[in-house]
Image (cartoon, rainbow, N blue to C red; front, side, top):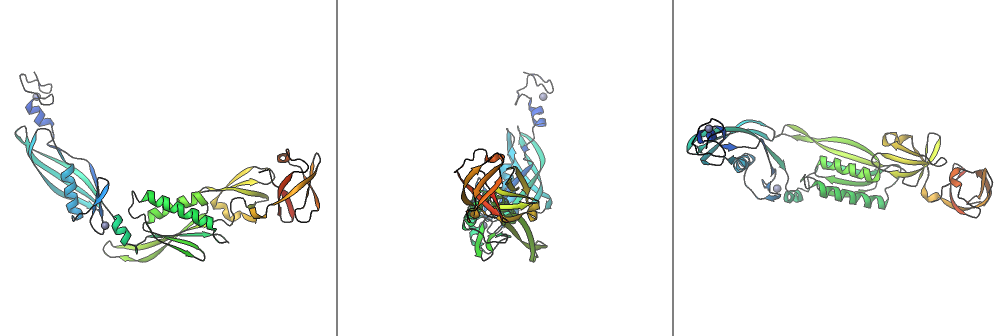
Length: 349
Ligand SMILES: [Zn+2]
Ligand SMILES: [Zn+2]
């Protein structure tokens, strides 16, 4: 047998190398570059192996514990002693020099490595429950120029509940402190601002609307040396709902969808779809609503005209025949809406 590294013959090989080459090539310990641990800022319990466990370690002791657990001695290492030196600390991240001393195949060796340890401070679920007074953000659900619907509130509650359930797996502060119904709408008090932002995005995807944010200075955290803000995030639902009628520039359309991107409107006459982003919301005017749609009857059709009865006065009205009325027949019951004293025939359902 010979060592491929140095060519020495008649040597016992350790992982393919002679003893001296193995000792030279093998670090006594191997270290991860980075480590993370989560500790509850209130009760010091730690999050390990997917669950919270009681602990009375402070962050520095926790750092030593997880370092000790994650440093791996090499095969053939014995009597390994570790020592830790903090080189630098920035916020919750510690730069630690790990020094190891021990024996490798009987030879005294040392090895040093550097590990960044991040100790994330959050609030454990138990503390969250009790920390009911603490919240970073308030989501204000409102509607523009109208009251919120019971269905809108139900939908919002369900979106909020589901997104917090997902968020809390990664953010222990993603909890609802309180839900308060007031005259103007619903206020949701949320533990974490980041979670609240994420919830608002979900609400907007489901309900549409315009998001606004106003931070208010609540005081100063003397120990951290920074100002404490609480953020009010408002989601204002549009004055109209799906199925309502709006005017935009010089055309009229029916709202076919509302989501995070904007309003999807179908032109009443051309049936073309227009996507209007929320930033242009102020240009949209609600002119009628789905509840105002009425039924009437087609009384005559000529090559260019269609005659229907006015739904309220039964007066015959001759209107232009449009391509989407191709399958309309005399005697059909159809839907119309009156906007600004003008009757518009809606496409078939
Ligand atoms: Zn060798
Ligand atoms: Zn706790």
